[in-house]
Length: 137
Image 1: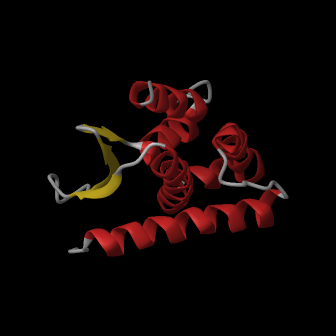
Image 2: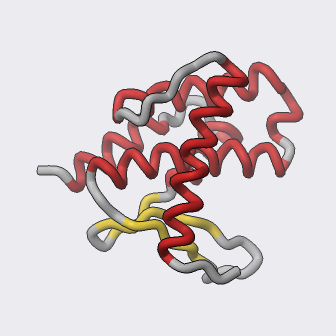
C-alpha cells in the first residue's frame, strides 16, 4: 500500500478521533487529547479485555484496539513534541506504522499491543512519558 505523508497523517488523525468516539461509546470515558489522558488509555485497554474477554484477543480486535490507541497517543506526542508518521514496509508480511522524531521511532500501537496481549503491567503512559522526556529538555 502506497500512501503519501499527508494521507498517512490524515489517517492517523482520523484514527485518533475514532479512539475518542469509540471510548466514549464503549465505556463512557472521555479522552480529551491531553498528555494526562494517556493514563486513561492504560485503563481503557484493560476494559476491552474485561468487557469482551477472550474475543478481545482475536486478531482483528487486537489490531483495531492497538491502532486506535496507538494513533491517539501518537497524535498527542506529535502535537506536544513533533514528529511524523511513517509506514514501515520493511517486512511486507507485517507492515506497521511508527512515529518518527529526531532520529527515533516510537511504536505507540506496539506498546498498546504489549499491554493488551502480553502483560497488563506494561504502561502506555510510562512509555509515552519516557518518549516525551527523551525529547524535551
